[in-house]
Length: 172
Image (cartoon, rainbow, N blue to C red; front, side, top):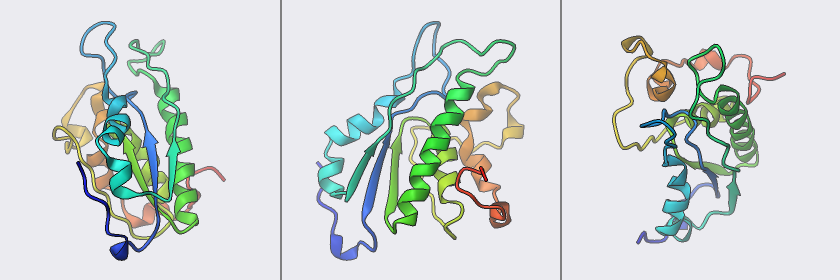
């Protein structure tokens, strides 16, 4: 069980964004759906909410997972990954805009895209990425479609100048 967060050391209210997500992962076998979407629920049941005492909890709806690639591509769930991350980016940007601290808990690394897109206009930022395995591979190191599962390596290459034309989701 986690202990309560010491609010005296907290500079901003925490907004917990629970993002149950697994769309960036491939199935382990035909018909299998990765279970990483359960992470926000599992952490909540382990006492995360009681430990953090967030000012606000925002629950994103779990998108449907497809085990099959889109027609004429090798990519699974592409449009759903995009729309989920655009929604997440809007929530993160709104949270920061209200002066709160967004804490995003999700299922697979692909949500880093939305979380960082939402935070990119707010100035310098930090990323704490906790994962069950190493994802720090540069996209050039793989020839498979699993490049989507390597966002920490993409993020490492981002430059502050990349946010010159800043709207949280890149939409004008």
